Amino acid sequence: MGKESSLGAFLRERRTRLDPAALGYPAGRRRTAGLRREEVAQRANISPTWYSWLEQGRGGAPSAQVLDRLAQALLLTDVEREHLFLLGLGRPPEVEYRPVEGVTPRLQRVLDAMGACPAMVRTATWDIVAWNRAAAVVLTDYGTLPPDRRNVLRQIFLNPRAREINFDWEAVARFVVGVFRGDAARAGAAQSVQPLVDELCRDSPEFAAMWRDNDVRSFGEGVKRLRHPVLGTLALEYSSFAVEGRPDLAMLVYIPVDEADAVTIRELIEDKAE
Image 1 (tube, helix red, strand yellow):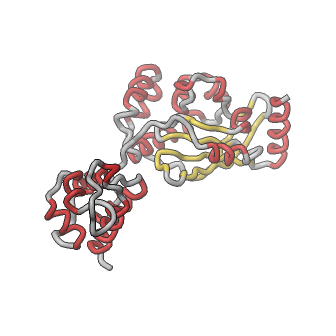
Image 2 (tube, one colour):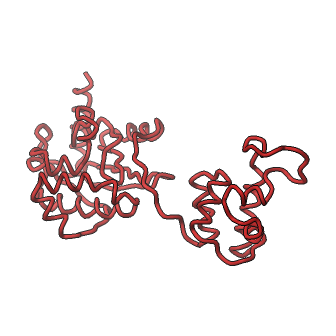
Image 3 (tube, rainbow, N blue to C red):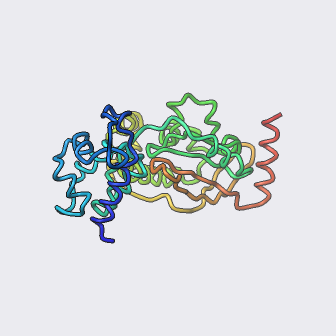
């Protein structure tokens, strides 16, 4: 099947799933289940003829605006909307950033199962929205901070402790600024992060200078070295993982390079729990 016929089949199938009565249309006698073509066209504010052509694979590729209106008219989920764009235009829709308030209990259980490996979930704006006990004892106990301070950039540039515990603080700071810039743009959050950028430029000359460099980086993998006040010198391998269905979230996992460090982290977690 070609792109257009696949698009038509998808539109028809989703149209037949909708309940006319629930959407304010008379149920009456209908030849097929769901909405009529002209009703979908009315909801999407496009001509019935143009919508019919789309279902029939005629008339060329629709615009992104038309696909957006069709997604709303057909009550598509985010995943279905993305699929509609892939069928209609061969690309996903533009990202619309939405602030995150938390994570699912299942994702929190994944973090908790990491044991001695510090793990957390960050947003595209580098707010930490979930973490495990290992992260609290090794990196930062985010539970003791107000929500608006649970931001990695605020901690690095505005908290003096960050300079004490990070080997080569400047390299770490430049790396985070570059990844932050790329993440915000990729998630469509450029406008959302502007107040944070303005605040950091005002309060941290180092951030202001690094931000002006326009450096862009990806998180990738590497080794983080820390001077921990209790654990001493630590080397942690880090990796970043996408959260399925949530392009605005990333899970960061830090694995102790030395098994002895992992044992000590477990002991410190137990001490804190008592």
